Amino acid sequence: MKRLILSVVLLVAALPNLDAQSVLDDKVQDGIIKKEHIQNRKPIPYTPIREADVMWKRRVWRIIDLREKINLPLYYPLGNDVNGLRSLTNVIYKSVTEEVSLRVYSGAIDDFSQEVTPSEVKKMTEKSYEKVIPSMMDPSIDTTIIVTESFSPNRVKKFLIKEEWFFDRQRSVLDVRILGICPMYEQEDKEKGDQPLFWVYFPEARKEFAKYDVFNRQNPQERRSFDDIFWKRQFSSYIIKEENVYDRSINEYKKGMDALLESNRIKDEIITFEHDLWDF
Image (tube, rainbow, N blue to C red):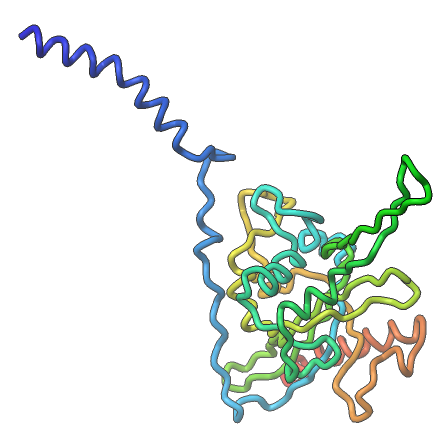
């Protein structure tokens, strides 16, 4: 009996230590709930389309300026991950260079015919150079070091997207599919404009976009993924080119305000096409 009482006392005394040990072993949760919804999500599959059902289509190229207010959730956070959030640039760049989960194509050609390697992408975005540091003790003695500048996500302020608008007569709807997305890297000489880095095939990238949250300014608990933003067209953009026989962009034949009016004209033609099919 005494042995039984002693065992119970020792067990009760050890319980606080066990609880403390379990707390130390568990990872601290930053929040009241464990966020698992977005991480396990998959993109909504596209509706199958037959060639015979596409009675009309128009291919256009758009620029998404991340500095516009509606596009800021795609731009945040600027640097490393913050509270589990990544910017769109970080998602694409890390998927291409570190996780190697996406294929990448040359930024000079937008038909996805020239595939490039992750090491080639790093050469475009990372720069190494020699820097001479004079000695503090003897000015005549210099020390040469190699400085490596890593990729800076905040220098990507624009994205170029390629998409096709089409009318599906089977469903009787005007629909759109994004074909590719290309980060535009701001060059050191800003007068030279932005440099297209590489193209990513958008239908392939959707599985990565669906796994990451986007900051929601209205309700942070109602998290959306990058795929949701593109699926619901919750971004601002402007057209810079439409498919044409000359294969030229708008800025090659229109300048200033005329270029903006031409961009709006192409957008209005796409929107009004569906309305013109119906008789009210």
